[in-house]
Amino acid sequence: MVSRRDFLKGSGALALVSLVIPEWANAAAFGKGATKSIGIQMFTVLKLMGDDVKGTFKKIADIGFKDVETAFSPKGYYYGLKPKELKTMIEDLGMKWRSHHVMGAPFKMPEGRQLPPEFAFIASLPNLRDNHQQLIDEAAEGGVPYLVCASAPVSTRDEIKDTIDIFNKTGEGCKKAKFQFAYHNHATEFDLIEGQSPYDLIMSQTDKELVKMELDLAWATKAKQDPVALFKQHPGRFPLWHVKDISADLTTITGIGSGVVPFKRIFENAKVSGMKHFFYEHDMVPSMESVSTSFSNLSKIVA
Image (tube, rainbow, N blue to C red):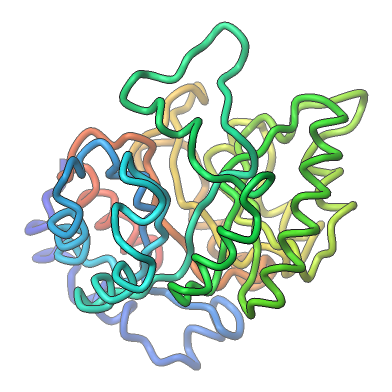
């Protein structure tokens, strides 16, 4: 395993150049308004955080992450802080708060499965179906540019219809609050329901300006979807990405560079997608060392 120290010795200069490259060069490679600053979805380190919220964010900053996308913890969506307090903490550590995840409806596991006890709190989190205005107001208080639905029910046509209605309503609300709404996919959105995929229905029945997408590259790959083909089918609709890797048998989320997601080809099509920010994610990462290694590998890809 490559340590952060070894990576910085071997290719740190190249990575550093890529991170401070002038904005005009970023625009040429990624499209207008895009960034090469590497972000992280904080769900990655949920199991590692415990009660040390500020300490965990500091470790993330020390690794080199510049952008943050938040999610939740047993203390709630803002880790026991007020949105303004969280924003200040993130910025004081030299990072930018780019995006925040909330639930679309009360979370439920597939039939026959249960949430592990330590994650039971997720089912009681406020959600866009029942707490629509509260979640928009909190995001506005924090000044976050993107509010993202992390998960929504899509297993039946009725659930899909309800989810689409929630998304259109939330998109309107976010526009009024002067930030952007987006939706984060898993693999199930690409399963056929009565001959159509929830993903296609969401894309065709929501306003493309009000409802953007955060494409999870690993879940799309697991569903045997080509991210580049999705970009070309819906150009400009993917301002956010989750940069996540998955094993060759498509069963296990892995560190960046140890799976089969074709990151180089995907990043080459960033401009087509409309990508503005991207966030490394590894569901329930085993250690902070793994986070550091993935940051190093992603730095090489971006460079």
